[in-house]
Image 1 (cartoon, rainbow, N blue to C red):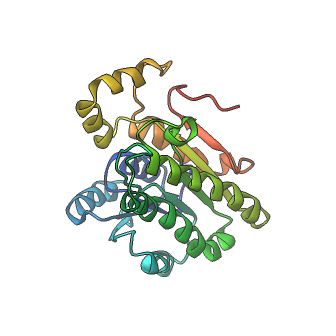
Image 2 (image 1 turned 90 degrees about the vertical axis):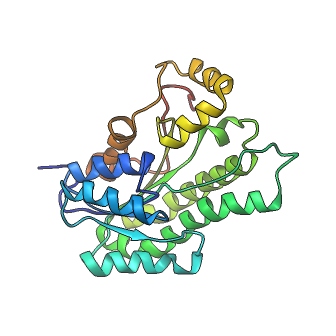
Length: 251
């Protein structure tokens, strides 16, 4: 029996990078995965690959900054499959800048693409997850936990996500819903581009990872997502799981 056999999952930002890695890992474990992404072309290409393992998986093109429409995504999925078991809030975009240089527009961009979609999708999914006693996986970052320089807007939004995840764990736990966080360092296209643009900063980051490598989006990050989405994690909630090769050690 596959770990996620028959489960229905939504993954935002699922067309590429970490989102695609998680989606691939989940369909291989029997899940029907709905990837939500802004990029129509890449989303359609990715879902075809997912359907090789899970024919009923699908792609929804959506702009997550249109917050009033986020509930429609959840309803569309629940209407199609009759349920929702797993919500993964992975999508987030931001711009690097110091606190001194960060503008209101940059703060808004980070919160509108990361924090608010996470909040509103959890809110919309709650009635369905109550029925399935489902799982929520949100995303934090070492940038927020460690206070990385030039990451003001991103770190702020990620720590806000951590805060509401802990609140949700307390509020949703009585319904049998688990809510956890993954804080990854992964070899995603965005990370590779960033490394090429900031080679000295990248080498400094790599030197602080005990495993001396970036995580693979499917075999490293995706497999942890499968664990958190499965019954194997039924007694874990409100936790930040550092999937970063040991770069950050929480106390």
